[in-house]
Amino acid sequence: MSLIDKHINKDNLHHAYLIEGVRDEITPEVFVFLENIGVKTSGNSDFIHVVMDSLKIKDALNIKARSLERPISEDKKVFIISVNNFLIEAQNTLLKMFEEPIENTMFFLIVPDSSIILPTLLSRLNVIKLKNNTTINQKQAEEFLKMSPSDRIAFIK
Image (cartoon, rainbow, N blue to C red):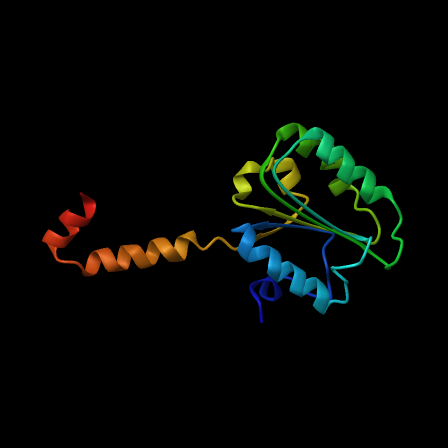
């Protein structure tokens, strides 16, 4: 069972998920999840995968326009939008789309940190936090505590 499977109920899908974590780790898991629920991720004009450093207003307008199109080959349209930065103006552009879900359309937003998302938009998304930083920091802290005092001083330097 993947990390995504642990957080998403296949029998009761939400229209929009915000997944917080490392893009290169999360994206392949979302692809597998989608394939497992019957969404073709290749050769499917109703599957849109957007990867960019910063989502701007023009990008948001393009996504919004594509979301309003009817599905062509499948019964649902699926978007994976993976960004490092999501400009506030772009978030406001997409807000209405998430307030009033479009029938047969699902979104997976992947961001490194959910704090970049406006609270009004965040409240319309099903948030999944997959950041591994806590686990890494906890392991480092445990290792640090196991060190002798002189090794701790050397580590700090």
